[in-house]
Length: 495
Ligand SMILES: Nc1nc2c(ncn2[C@@H]2O[C@H](COP(=O)(O)OP(=O)(O)OP(=O)(O)O)[C@@H](O)[C@H]2O)c(=O)[nH]1
Image 1 (cartoon, helix red, strand yellow):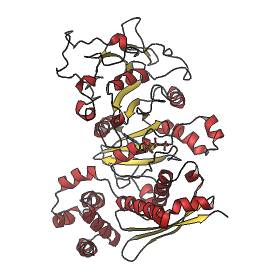
Image 2 (tube, helix red, strand yellow; image 1 turned 90 degrees about the vertical axis):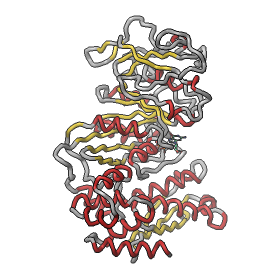
Image 3 (cartoon, helix red, strand yellow; image 1 turned 120 degrees about the vertical axis):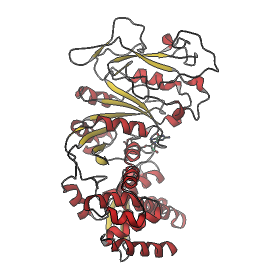
Image 4 (cartoon, protein in one colour; image 1 turned 60 degrees about the horizontal axis):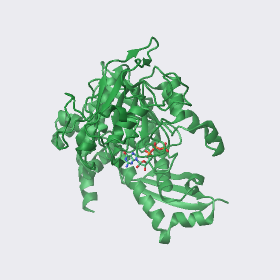
């Protein structure tokens, strides 16, 4: 009640500054939710000169709103018409505008949507532990100063055979390829906590990279928070890059023989520091910071939390004895005692037989779920933007409609809470989408399941599960739209 009164008062104050009714309500909501008012005022006010009036009321300087605005991106409009208008609106780019389109590709469940949400600073893509949460590609937009980064979130890469066997829709097969075709840079995400898949790049990934060999590609090892033995990161890096990053050969050294003997890198484990001295276990642990091309790669603090000790960190460095082929490919020197894992396919082997990709420009090791090192990746992406026109107005955070966002987030929860195939056979339809008298968003969505027992599962005892899903999705939607949301879910059985 107190919050509602406070909101109404703030809303009136904001309206006196010349803001429209919805803008005032959103701003008031944001202010009382958190301090997201800064981003909101930035996105609204920076275009029409109202920033000074709002700034006075909120005691926020222009610099402050810009700084915090970087942290908190603009809200998404609850109205499809408004969102469509924004999407078609002429981008409000400055003269020195820069742009970078980034396709995020990887196997299903690698964490592509989680990373996209992290980079955006707002959850607009659905995430779940079940595969194929993302059904078609969608875009997220980060606008910071004169630079715009467009993230192309894609469904997990799958083979045509698999798509046919599981009767999966065409978008799952085509969209990742389409996104790569449109991208300026591709992020290849690998789930390094998955023992079954982490030792080799997915065949479809390799096919995709081979098809666009001149597109800059960056390897991202995700879910480092789940890895106990951090030393494995460098071993995996050597495998997945075929021992070459940015045209340079990797040399992996370990101060302690922590890598297993049968390791593909064991012949390079020297147990010595850079000066060739044998090191003691209590010395300062060398880490792979700035190992490649002078850029940041791995940060000890970011990765050491659950590490058994610094001795787990091997050291990686790059020798410059790699040469570029005339086609831009990297050729291995004859015998340099390289870190290249044995038994890998040749440099130009077909994607079926190779395990890694030797043309990655950079390697990042991060945790999309808790944000470790995501900012480092974001900074890197910012530096890669090239002069060019923006794709979107700075107030756009995604190209999805508000209804699509809502459907996807409900599906995310259905995937999370329902067993096996049940959530994949559900049909969702939005029956009501309207703005209530106090500016709240009212949504009624029908969820049609295939069988009665599925409906029982979904409703849960005394309506507990469906109630929880409605509350959780409602909360997510409030954070996206920055307004009150009343979400009702109605479970039906297919006739
Ligand atoms: N522990 C941990 N879990 C993560 C991390 N990143 C993603 N996840 C989890 O991995 C699961 C899959 O994440 P998504 O972002 O949906 O993966 P995706 O690649 O978009 O999946 P698809 O839509 O199937 O292609 C979710 O349960 C996430 O919470 C991470 O860095 N650490």
